[in-house]
Length: 594
Ligand code: BDP
Image 1 (cartoon, rainbow, N blue to C red):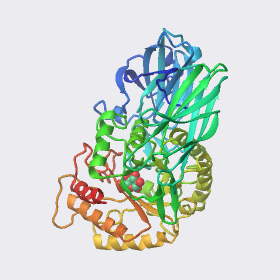
Image 2: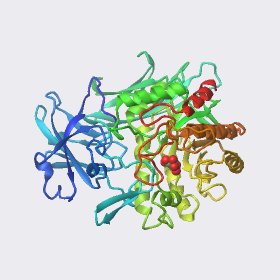
Image 3: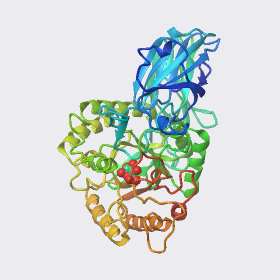
Image 4: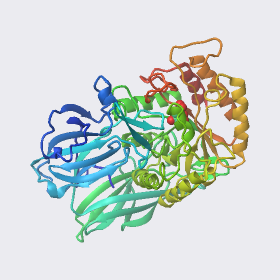
């Protein structure tokens, strides 16, 4: 699936702005055919945004079920061929109607989907678009959850530590393509690193619908054609290639053209890509043959008011803060981020660990977040079972399909902190590793290990190309005791080193209330967060197998209510409104000097 684009043969129109909006607490919208006319009693709601925090009170914040969005749009006069409606994300599931016809059903809240609506529209006319968006998490969704029916109404329960924001979080697009068109492009690259000016090899595959032949050109950043090829698949050499490097996101464009027998243009699509290599050698993580050390954060798409809605202004500010602090990488904890974020990472050389939404699959963490209610096992037929695994496989397919051409993505993280110490977990994950590798043999595949499944009880790490660890020594364990935390961190790390694989610490940190201070190492203070950071980084520095440090979290973020959280998770280096805590200066001093 290609993104909407403006090319000599294509047009695109964003449908962002205010949409009509209603909730459907009784779940009667379909039976009452709400899509057949204007939504009764609607209020206006911005797209993109989470709807949860836009209205005071609990009703919308905690709403469980389907909400309906609607607007009309005029199809531009000249769009006489193929018309596509695309949602960059609808969290977590959606059904879409054009006038009275259902055109798309999609599950998975953080990945795009589209519908060919050509036969339902007429160029020049208005159409009504209605979307029912469901925020419910079940044992068949990724992430998992369940809805509890209580005397006070339904309650959404889930086992992950971020608020279940919902709605149309990213842009909606109406776009046109020719009838005979390019439908997908895959680019993989190699580089002969033995040369000073390496030759790049670009392999491509262009999928098309309808008659026509394919010609491709490789364009440099200034638009100069540096190589060309003919045919739907092939390989072309780029002499003296300029590599995509961390900190320097040099990209090329593969311009694919579909042409008829006489050579006339039928369709054109520009696909950006970078020439770079990623390789694991022993405990080293190599980008372009050079050892790479990850600095940065696990992040969240999370802001005041807009929740998980994408905003260019907030995105640019967050990336500027990453630059300011000297971070060279991020993990898209705990779901695929907006494509605008990924574009920025590609264009600016920010290295990305790209994560699926498979989070909240640990009985240990789940139990803590659920106020201590014991959960005997997560991976079982009546919980995370075959249904969830099918959904998990589907998000992996859709994530790889969306991000496969991105040079910034160097690792697929297929899950965050699942139980990995049981036979059931091993049986669940083994095929998902195989699937990911089959879909993309060019990138390392891993998952993020939870503290309660250490070496040697973890049965899943054996399938991963590298070890990614979330560790809270000094916070959840050895709470407040830095010397003991240091011992424990060190002792466990030594065990992981025996795998002979690179180790990235993808989480470590301490909840910290900005402005709270102590001279005696009190937890929750800015001093304690810095002290814990200092200790943790000191341990990493003693071990060559550690090839990355991504602190938890970039910024404070919203969670569900609970006795473990004070208006959300406060482990940010920045507050939720992006003011630096003391630790931000510590990290900046370290990372800008590396
Ligand atoms: C880990 C999770 C992360 C949490 C973090 C924490 O991966 O989502 O927010 O710990 O507790 O369990 O702060």
